[in-house]
Structure formats: C-alpha cells, structure tokens
Image (cartoon, rainbow, N blue to C red):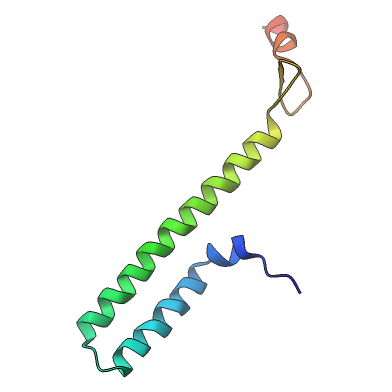
Length: 89
C-alpha cells in the first residue's frame, strides 16, 4: 500500500496527533506545561506552513495542466489558441 504523503502532510488530524504525542513526551520528560504548550504551538505553526506550501503547489500544478503553451501559441483547456480567442472578441 502506497502512502499519499501530500494528503497526509496537509491533514490537520495528522498534525494534531503529532503535536499531542510530542506534547505528552515533553511532559513525561519532566518539562513544564508551558514548555509543552510552546512545543505544541511550534509544531502546529510548522504544520500550517507545510499545508500551505502543498496546497499552493497543487493549485499551481492544476493551473499549468489547464493552460499550456505549444509552439508559441497559448492554448486554454478547451484547446483554443490565443489567436482564436482574440478573433472571437
């Protein structure tokens, strides 16, 4: 079974699980609740950045797939070239 890492790394549930696990380990090691909360906040902030980067990458790749250039003519997802679009306008 192949793991879909893009989906996994952008999952809020995944990052909450990681933050919870690390927070419990920090507390078990004898650190204070405040220090554990700071560690958890850092993990969640990092998760937000990772999720944003993945989402933007997926959006950019979807845009590239729907709008591409062949031999100097830009075509939209309907297969119309830029010159055909201008002629209709």
